[in-house]
Image (cartoon, rainbow, N blue to C red):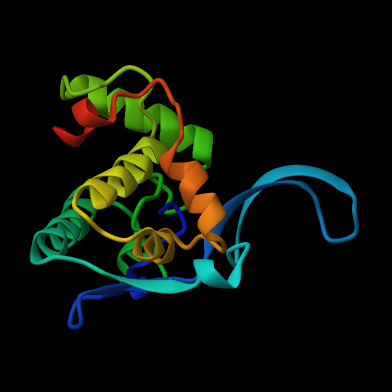
Length: 169
């Protein structure tokens, strides 16, 4: 989500292309110790995928783009290669930076559920898909997991987050 750019969203077909990921790196290609967040290709071929979206999400994204423009974000943010979720300078958020902003937003809207982080919604989505009768294979493909085993582990995650409560948000 944090690597998503406007040109990854096809408003005509209702599909989002996932072909980049935000990754925290501790070593570079030469094995040298570095610390930082980078955008790169996802870790597995299964992570490269297109996901359909609803008219409701289309409306939310278009309104978000308008909000960015109205709030004085740089023009580069609104261009095709601009990040959809970005800081005031138009750069991507680090994972920790986004977690902090996300938590603050949920609290300001009085919808914070203890233990919730942005990743919690991915788990909640997977659980809702399973409860709606979707196959494990379909959930695997939507999440971009390489193996079914990963999806099973994912669905059996024993986090402190109440997914039923989270689904109400």
